[in-house]
Length: 444
Image 1: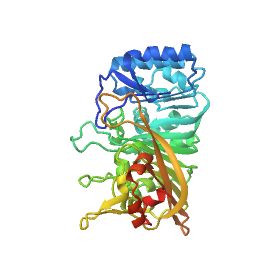
Image 2: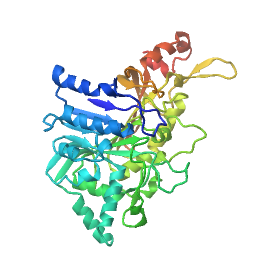
Image 3: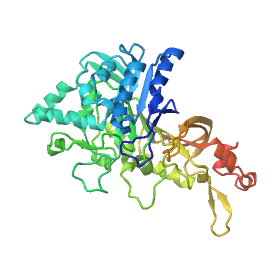
Image 4: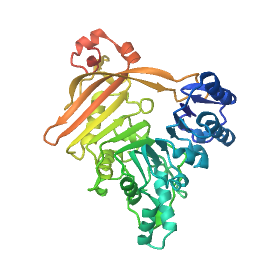
């Protein structure tokens, strides 16, 4: 079950909207209890997975009430059936109820430090979710318990226990964090993280794979700064110049998955859609930094299907993505990217002839005859009134590949266009005039 508050892109304050979305359908706040009771009694549903999103943006009274209703009506006292609980600690900041359920789940998070401190039991999780803020909290806790760097690292060793392990560690990274004393207009960015804390978690928890969840903003926007006053920890972030990031020679992960459905700055810097008047945020260093922090031979990336959608010059976009992905001339690496675009990206208006022309395939790419499709849920940015349900849209995809056999590097770029837009843009005469066009491959 998915329970979420849907906000407009620049909305950051708590709101008094009188509805939320449950499983992609609008439910009035006064009807939530009745809806949950209906699920329990009439339907007899046994909820195994609950994901909440941005409940922290609701007014406090309803946020806390909804948190308690989820526990009492959906999870139950014993949490017998629950296997996955994601996002609920954003509403309570790590209460006893949530930390108790964490003991029973196979997937849980994102962890608050208070919940982490209760994890003294032995358990293997399929997936644990953590945040960049948690890394700061751990570093500051260890500093507060020590008098020097040596004592600090001993405390770190005692804080991160090896009794738990996780197959996949999902790291939520806020793209717009701030320092308390920062000048307005210069503040929003992904901030440095204490590397030794990250490395300790990766080793102690026997992490096999990594997920990076790039998020435009979260409720942990304010940075902790005390740990930065000490030189105990190495500062790292994914948009720093990659040559500054030391490699991890003794770590290796099966794969790193990057989720960007809620990203703005990272997805822009990867060449998808960047306003000319905006300065890059450094995410061109993203891939090399991933391989230094989380060594792997396989990276997969899902770019956003609803925010910062590419809408012009498919050849340029494909070339930019290739440049960013291969800027370090990677060896022994496979990168899979799902790239969602608007149909306008396939054509341009010739200013001299005033006629439409179709773009071709970018240089170095080869078309692979993969017929792909997927369905995505989305709402428009302007959601003040709140449509009754999310739209389910079908996307049609084709695979384009770049292969460097010498360096054993492969980029699989799966480009998706909405099926409805393909139907609208279809122009048989124009396709015949440009037989080698990019979009023509979607009609074969």
